[in-house]
Length: 410
Image (cartoon, rainbow, N blue to C red; front, side):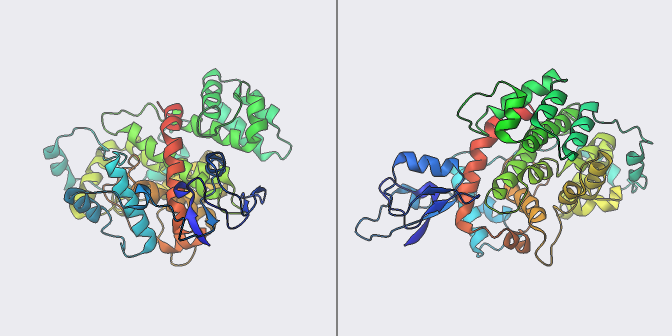
């Protein structure tokens, strides 16, 4: 018997143990000879790995078992990219090897967060910048922070009601034709892979669940709110690719962990960097200088933010979430996504933290950081997920991100 990643299964392999999904539903019995149909089903259910019967005489080998070819420049870049991580750690080594493969297939995205700028002006400004002491005034509306659309508040209030139904959510979302159309596109995309086309919001809520449809609607509303930020200073498409991928990664991790509310970690992952957009929107010059200072000192943006802005984007984002009446649980996910955990954190907090690290590590979009921090192993261990499941999870993210981000942002 041996465990094998679901993406390395070959037709003809024999199951060594029964396969059940997260809810305990039996999918396949042991001793079954797998065909392409069963393999597709395993991937559809998000099963990361299975146990197969080992037979040295029939061991199937192929090019997928070999490490992809790489060149010196790729290795040098990745060695520098992972410099704060222990490559000898099996989890880090797995992600590192997956990155080699992503480079080979042009899947590793290296994009500029900021647009063109006058470095001379920036450098001269660095010596003059003073810490901003009134950042919290934004939350008091004294700097006229706009409110989210009324429909956002209506959805937020509705889902707090235990008697809220799919019909109720459909009625609220239907008030906004653009939101309705976008939500239905996402529901019918590869992100969910439903067998039948969903043509009504009420049916969408029945098929996916009221909370899941509500989470999608809230996420779309918040992203629409920030579409007015100029692309001249920040690469917004890259930013939202990172954010949506983080939400998808969090939701994917959640499917493998019992007791986790997948809709909540999806929203936490999607909005984890929302505070950074506020900084950019209200203090673009200061943030631009902060960005260059972080590069100059070899620090991460979240390490420099308190000195110049008085607060990190993670902390500010969590306060903003409370102002917008998100639950304390979601606010906590945003607040702690950069924490250096000394002990194992709560699983949902760990999921968003690890998802942010993983999406950054494998090069999907950009949050603005120009380096990769160390993976917090207390957060990783809190997930209780095996390293062999990583490849499956990353492939699930890749499969869903291309189409999903298009509907959320573009």
